[in-house]
Image (cartoon, rainbow, N blue to C red; front, side, top):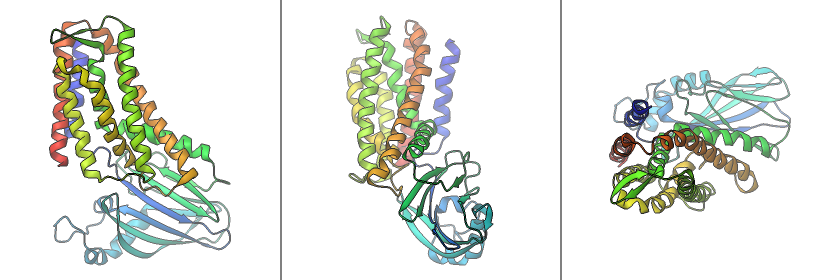
Length: 370
């Protein structure tokens, strides 16, 4: 188990360094549907990141990294063809022919988006469904946040590569929204490797105690459990607070400084783990940087079209999903490091080397995000 556990942390650190700089900014597009109770036309507006479409359509003709409106107009026929190949609408089981009505540039999540207005002409009445590959091929982290309006009702859903189609339900269900966003919370953590790394850095010293400036194995499970519960609870309270504040629009901070601060939290946590005399800083570190990680989580939901009571099941489900994923990480890692806590190779090998490697990944991300 000695070599296996060491290899896990070193491999994770290597994978993290090779991963994209911004772990919380998964590729997200936004679809708004207007479903008439009577009438053949379903209006669709699809806001998609230019980053997604440039892999399919060559738009940036002067290679300056900035897509202008003139370049969009020049590539419009190709863009329309690509968009129509990625999305489909049906009603009453019959496909609805789609046509592009308008293109515009928009800003979402502090990024440039292409806003595509479409019309679906449906010959049959009945239940509406929408889906397609939606430029999600090849990236499990991609999401399409859907908002569908029918009369006075609004349905909200998150489409993913594994569930790329939405079917109009008979009525709005807060429970279904809650369950769906529990899954989104779990997925967001498991794909957001910087959060996993931070939790691991909080866990690594939890089975040790500082004695005369050195790490030694904790004496029993009760002592370890108390430490983990205290640290994780502080982290959870903090990130749940800022997640709620950010998603409801009460507090808004730019994405780039938040992502940089998350990377800095990893570097700091890795450094503290190397200095047993600073172990008393782990609790304020978890609580303080928990606020920062909450803003990172909020990026996944910040622009969803919901407010008030409609937002509650989405926010609650997402937050619970985050906690479920976090608990799964603790459950998977804790038995291994607890059994190894009294060995020299853990106190002088796995713990410092793992902390150093994961902390170094945080330094790399910080440089990338500044």
